[in-house]
Length: 486
Image (cartoon, rainbow, N blue to C red):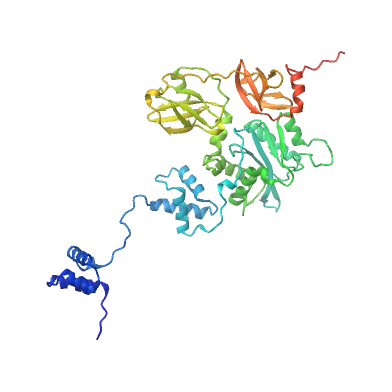
């Protein structure tokens, strides 16, 4: 009778034959293997007995770069709590939470696929397909709109007058109103300006509460009148173009999905309190993927600090201002158009949006820190030779105002908002220059503001060129109105 032997039994039989005196070559030929395999069986049998003849998995006993189980569990937990979060958003949240030994974005993606929390076949647009734009600094442009869907206990759907800073994604307005009519919308705008200041421009759609562009008459609406009184330029989208205000629209989507859906509030006051708390977390705690994982407040707070005058101070004073006790001497540098600075013969990245601004550089303990208005913008490992680093603090070289290519430079008085008026358009000079007289000149495609022969601000031309003749005809500004004699 034929008896089928198992794999381990055959190997054990072959080992016993060799131990009983058979040659390895004969046993290997009889069992259909090479002699090296028989030697391996003998070695494993001698070290582990019969269990050594069992096939072992090829999986390594350890993997140094394997994702820790705790981190993997945290990734799965975040994805299940926020089904719309992708790998990059989860990585930003883990970084913000202070997790250590973080995996890369691709590792998080594979983790989500392994747990069937993401569809690997889902179509995804390439980054090159997106066309994004943003203003270079906070408070240059706000996007404002109205979003509904705030359910009240009496069955009424209230609305939110929302506003977002274009550069920082900081929410400047989230004002709950029962009806989004002209007066409540104007009150929301006034509240935002009292809290954060007056922006240079505001972008809205063509809603009747924002503009009379498509209305029956030519009389400006209340919203437009408030903007005109505060020297704010009102920008309007083209009809049926919601992507122009894409940042505030995207915030509306997040607001609905993560906060408003399924919630009912007792009244407007209760809804406002809840919205304020949620917005606080959005502004101050939540990393924003659209700005590289930064928190909106980290970007927006730079606009809340008055611009410092460039001057040389003692090293001890600068260290105190920057919160340093090491006595490291800061060195000022001008940020190039590519967002980099030169230090010690090497190039270090500051930020592209700081192009044309002056930053301070500190080098200590193998690190190079870039500081703007008292805030650390970037930190890099030192690349330059320590012997080539500047030993003394010096201010950035001042840029002489160049001759105007159109007309002659004109003088303008900086108003209480830190702006000057030129050709019917307000250009920011800086709050530190309020009440001072600056020179305004057109250089190339820019409006250049200079004080005492040094450029303090440069802005792209935003005014109507047809109005330049009137601006240059009044080089000292608008003449004062004559008082009527009694």
